[in-house]
Image (cartoon, rainbow, N blue to C red):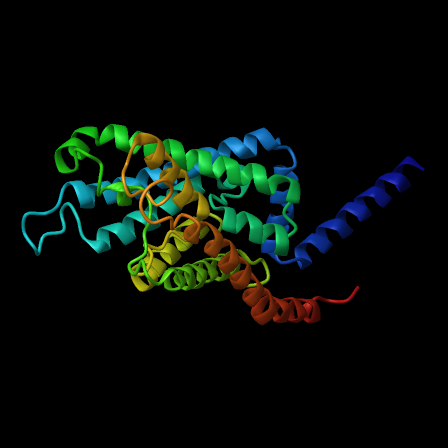
Length: 301
């Protein structure tokens, strides 16, 4: 009887292994990651989001500070500045931030991503506000560190802090047309979410887990190069509001929140709208066909 039971158990394990072998590897990895993530507490996830966003904004606003506070003496030189430096710097910043936090929290680093994941990917709604606050807090602290690091340069270039708030936050190219900046942010963030979902979709042809952050960073580079002029492409409410809040507290003039044009709401609201639109376009235009194709190709028992 013992032998029969052992054989039955062995057969069950064999059947389970065969069933696993029939599933796409990406789906197996996704299931394993979900099981691992259950062991992470909300506090651990919030710390990861805080630190990931801190890294993102340290590199991102750091490269802007280099461009603004240390301009090149030669028009052709790009040692200290240039728009190419900005787009590459922000793309690498996103990549590094995701590498820091991705395994624990998913590496959202952006309330627009968090909201879209809650609406379209079953992310817990009770975590949306805490994630967003952690992201904004990380961005605020990063801005404070960058300011302290470059304090002598700020005093030399802009002693009254009247024209350098843009190191930390974004402003419209056409202030009399706020709708232009709003549309720009909707389009940019829609592209961001559409491509994040395409890159990470287990039904699609996703890159390896270690390559996804690099690919998402390249998406940010592309958005910056293509949609960076109208409003500075924040495409992230935390990235803009956290540093903007710091500029207001630190006494920067024309910060867009407490002084000058009150444009702070554009890079907060527009990315949330754009992220939902981009995620909806991907799910309705691509993912539903991938799921149907995947179901049709699965062997029947």
